[in-house]
Image (cartoon, rainbow over all chains, first blue to last red; front, side, top):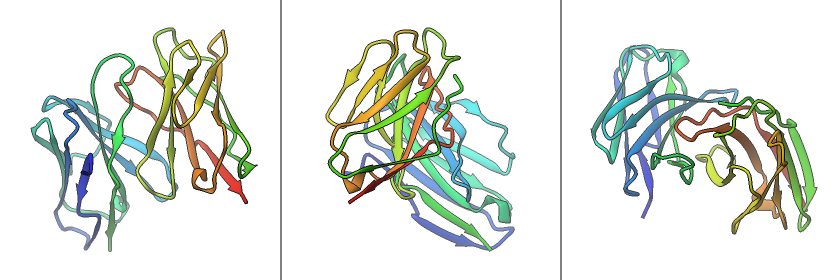
Length: 114
Length: 108
């Protein structure tokens, strides 16, 4: 069983469209994250949710709206897609607490905006 | 999170130990040292973490200096599948901030 699963794996869409990426974890973790990896391979945190509550919002445009219906799911909705949104988006989960045993990442969603 | 400094690239021969250094001179007393790797655009993979003591698991060993200003990740017998970008991160675990990492190439 995949621990952190993201769908879709690939997404090609036109500028101006609205799209969603879904993430689910079956590890029983209480915290989930979205990271963005751009073409230069920099991995940057976007959002963090703990038990469905937004914890971290790293100066991400408000076209990006995360939603966590329960602690096992964290979806990312993007409005009015722009060329610069093209990147690989990674979902991750962890169990909170000092010195937790690390994050588990999904395999990524490659978003291409044309 | 503590700022970390890693060499941009390294290589080692298959079957030999790979020793990846990391400087984290600004790490605070309650911040851990985490190591992750990313193999060819896959999701980052957790390797190991430690606070003060050296740590070992099935993947690697982590050696932290007594002053905690630097550490070394050791892959005892590197294989071609260990070719990846290795990230050293200093933090408390509530938010991982990835740097540019070290690109390790394991050669046959």
